[in-house]
Amino acid sequence: MTSDSARTPGRPFGRVLTAMVTPFDAEGRLDLDTAQELATRLVDLGNDGLVINGTTGEGPTTSDEEKSQLVRAVVEAVGERATVVAGAGTYDTAHSIHLARAAEAAGAHGLLLVTPYYSRPPQSGLVLHFSAIADATGLPVMLYDIPPRSVIPIDLETLQRLAQHPRIVAVKDARNDLRVGTEIIATTTLAYYSGDDPVNLPWLSVGAVGMVSVTGHVVADRLRAMLDAYEAGQTERARQLNASMLPVLRAMGRVGGAVFAKTAMRLRGLDVGDPRLPLPPATEAEVAAIVSDLDAAGVALDPEARAGRRSGGHGALGARAAADLGAEVAYR
Image 1 (cartoon, rainbow, N blue to C red):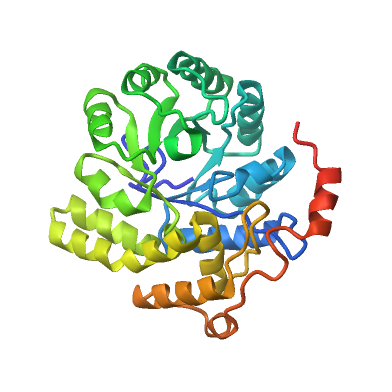
Image 2 (cartoon, rainbow, N blue to C red):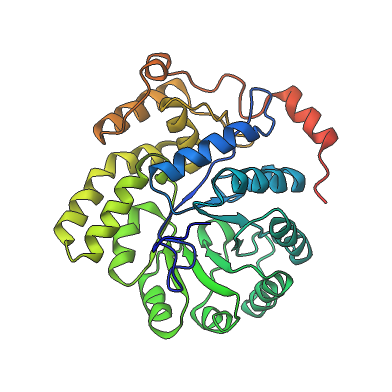
């Protein structure tokens, strides 16, 4: 993994991480060659780490074996240069432990554990759930607090209790409660990472150590420059860099993170395939709007891809491929 100053005890996973999309081929199957090329491009762009099998990586649509294959492929491609964090959280503690151990066996450097969704456990259940998974491997853990998707937030007192676990070292925050975050930063050793691109800079102002980004697919170098400027006391420069990325945020807001990132990578010359159902690919009108947004942000696009501006051709996952996968995939 990365050995430079980006990864320190206070920044256990580095500073700038991107939540990487999962490439699929034209039949909707996992494309490991493209995954390795994508991972290499993202690290070359300035990412200290990659989060895979997460929300943007369409983790709920990939099988356990696909998750392990993706971890192995990404670690092989960039594991000497970047931190590879594997999503392993589900609403089933036993299954999450299985995924965590599989990620460790596949070479992951850390785990991302989302709050259990759907089942809506009490805070005491969250402590037991996260602690059991953290106990199951030797990997450092980043908790993922995202109530808009999980419904249940991780309360302040719960985070303070979990911070006492030796392997729970960080939080990816997509809750956007600066008061709670500021108190956690002040009262624990947990490293805070912004998990929502529109508020990356505000989070830095209260002590976040970095970000887990979706826009890092195309502007990781600018995110790093913004972070450098802020830490150097160049706050006006940081604000200017943040403002320069507003059109990218606008593009992402049109279709959501995974669809935006896949569309943007295709426009930059690397076709990572369409999302799997239930996410649809971007429409022609949405692609055209994203092109305009990325142009406004000064993001370089591939001329041939720009000329094609194609929307997804095989749907979120072709009906035949979906049927095939449904017959073949064993999720346990």
